Length: 332
Image 1 (cartoon, one colour):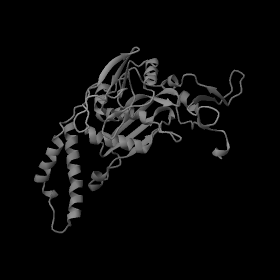
Image 2 (cartoon, one colour; image 1 turned 45 degrees about the vertical axis):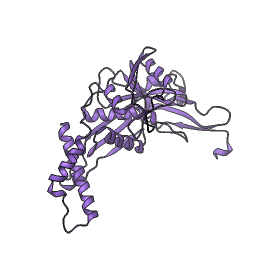
Image 3 (tube, one colour; image 1 turned 120 degrees about the vertical axis):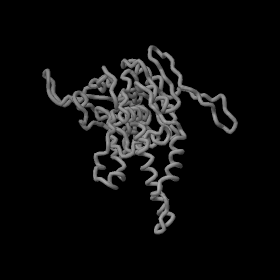
Image 4 (tube, one colour; image 1 turned 90 degrees about the vertical axis):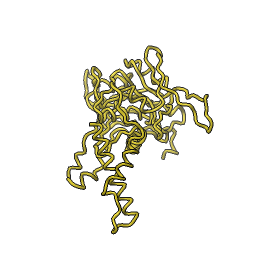
């Protein structure tokens, strides 16, 4: 049917928000033959009559960013909460991302059931695949373990930042999701005056997003004094032999009254956005610990009754559990 009509419009809104945001509706254009399909309309559903007017009308919302952050706790620095600037069509909108990381309540079976419990992953407002990708990058590139932990991520007010309608969208809030996850895991609060924008790559780098200056201006308009993002322009000079480029440190500058911090990696952004820096172990400690465990642990030796494939699988599982327990002991 979409090929037979000129415009295709979607009116979103399921009433999952709270307070003033429960009646928010978004009008998106998936196809528009006579105009731009990038525009997004934000409306409020007036379900009860008042002042002599008939209820059930759609009232345009002129400032959705202020409405979405109306219930935010911005007076104190809290853990597990970060704000990002999402581009809905051509309009920048601030969204609040909350995360909760707790000990796995589903792994209390005791014995092998508790050690085999991987943790629950629940995402509301972002795609489940994107959450798993961010967790994998944090574990691989930053050494931050979420094993046997329950992870919950929620975008406040019921906003879906992963809707694309054929266009890639929602990845610019990856940094806010990662900061809220690490903050909840480590109990280190996020600076309430800081906004986060950036896509996370598989190598742990921050990748550029579209309309970065427009997002910075929106963060300044909403009262934030700092914003952390990937570099606006990548350095192309200084290529080394073999095609590798030199590494550049994060930079900070004042842009129209807001401190704009441009970071290259996710670890730099985490240390800049949290109230205190993360205490990371040196890179070679885990490998040296793995070799020591393999040589000293008698449970990792091969028994005569098992094949080589069975022994490798059992050794890798036991080794992963031992190393994760050692990581948790060092963090405590």
